[in-house]
Length: 231
Image (cartoon, rainbow, N blue to C red):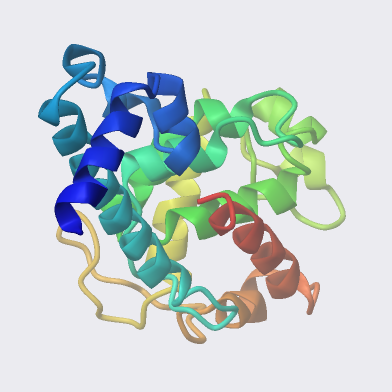
């Protein structure tokens, strides 16, 4: 019966530690701040129900986002990810040996919100162009994209920035203004897109005029998949 089930569940909950609860549903630590205050009785059951509901809502939101991830997705739209999602994605990336992307996850999130550009696309471009922030241009000039580089003089011609965030924002604005939106589209700060290199708001569209490597879009997308799969 329901009452019998409730009694059994109630008994189990009374003898479960906070760590047990965490292991059961792999719930983020910050959702357990009130569990210790309710170590017994119905409050513990109510808290667990609330936690599981929140977990379910979060998983459903993430699932909806992941269903839209594909190589032809439109990049001139926000991802729908939260700042906490970004933190989760960029914290502890094995190849981010210098912690450049971990330290700048909020910058990528802010660029997405400010300029209506997919922030994980922007980050994936930076990862690809800088070899996870290990290139000489990235280290010496805080330039994760090789922005401004010409093929015959890549280091000399590339822009130098005061910090990584300045370079990230510069490239975000350039992509939005010249590559991701057709001419006349209202963008940021009351400006309209020039659309000089617009061939569609997708990876292959950007590839057309941004990179001579015809497989550039596939390489960038592989990093996007890696990042999205960390959710």
